[in-house]
Image 1 (cartoon, rainbow, N blue to C red):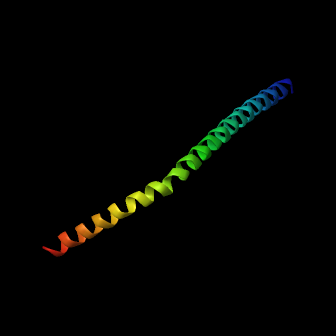
Image 2 (cartoon, rainbow, N blue to C red):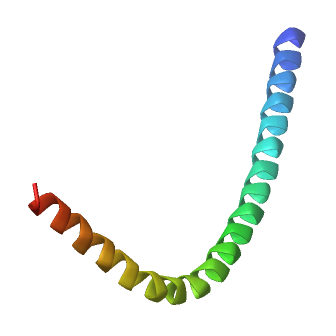
Image 3 (cartoon, helix red, strand yellow):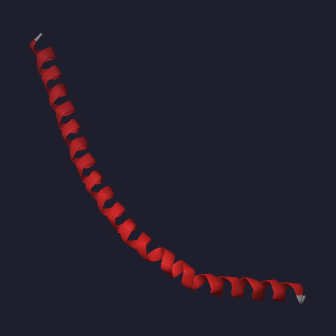
Length: 72
């Protein structure tokens, strides 16, 4: 009977330790997620301006590729 209680106590302690580890990991991942969202917002703000600047180059590149394919 005593061995069963001791085993149950060890099992509860392991479960508690595992739960604590998971809670710490969740907190860390939530912080990382918030940091990455902020970084994405900062990059996203500058992205549309860069995209507009690159659009003519992409169009010209597409036209050149089309002409070179058609010339063969």
